[in-house]
Length: 435
Ligand code: PMP
Image 1 (cartoon, rainbow, N blue to C red):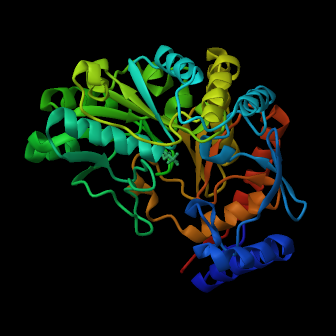
Image 2 (image 1 turned 90 degrees about the horizontal axis):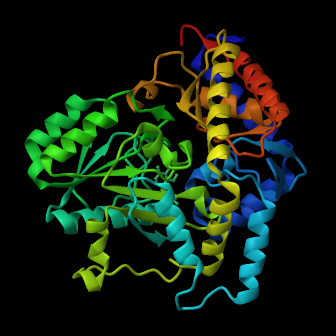
Image 3 (image 1 turned 90 degrees about the vertical axis):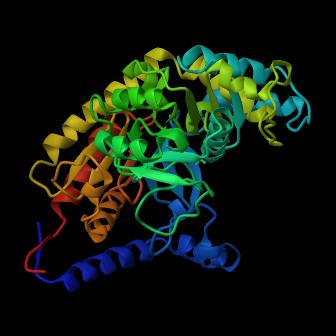
């Protein structure tokens, strides 16, 4: 473990890591310059951008990504959870190809949207009825507006560090574009902060939006009793509770709600449930969803050209019927728990620790206990970057911020390689003294 005594030395290490990365990827460098001409920041999905420039993928297969410069990586990022099934799973490829044969833009209804809705409603205990969207962001925006309509209240309770989509981000870094609702931020895993907000504003709050595990906020699991306490408080205050299960739906066949035995009023979904194709959904209590049913007196409309896109719907049916069995969901959950325990041991003598729940993991250059995003604010971003480059140069890819979403395609040998790579990268991190 190198010791650096000055802040500037840490900057030098980062500059060297970036330069070595860049030198090995001339084609990606060239494409980054081209992209920057027409895409602001060279990107159309901010999270994928990192300095000096992101590598560009040429091919994906199973749990492997190959970039345009010929480097192959074990993919532990799993497209931020959308890639749970790995790359190009055969049954999804077949379903998509068959759907394309029948046409992909009907402007009319079809069978697969019914089947996918049946599969979703059967699986998730708190979803009686569901509507599809194109993304998790849209699903959450719809859930918030449905709750505002149902309660006649306007305001929204959220948690610090939460990510509910491109327009619903409550983290610290960067300037977020925010949907124009009045938000009340509480502290994750802290019911006192919920009590304070409900006491003051409860009668104006329509919905509490919560991730059963803070995902983008650092893979911080909910503490025992936190979600139960939130459920009870929402009930008392007449606030609708929405679980954003865009990430945590992978915790069992019926999501985190099934694993925890909790019943939110509304649930939002996204990511992998359509086999990796564009997808989002919101659903919940039939009496609430009836707002979209004119026959039941509902007055809300819900548009979206691609809501029932035949290709996404067919991929979703194939994913849920053939790939995402209860057994497989359980195995993936156990694999993640086991991997985290291995990391805890392997990283013991390094400055890095692992957080998370099931198959979603966070790697953080800190040894402090992490129960809320504040616990991560002091982490030096340069150490995160060195850890990222250290693992990448050893052939393992995860998010620069240290986020991992396991796919079912990862083998035991892949995970061994990853544990070795991250342990070496963590052991190489400098310890700063006197900075
Ligand atoms: N909610 C959560 C918990 C998420 O993690 C994400 C995406 N990372 C979203 C919502 C937004 O989903 P999408 O990117 O499909 O808009």
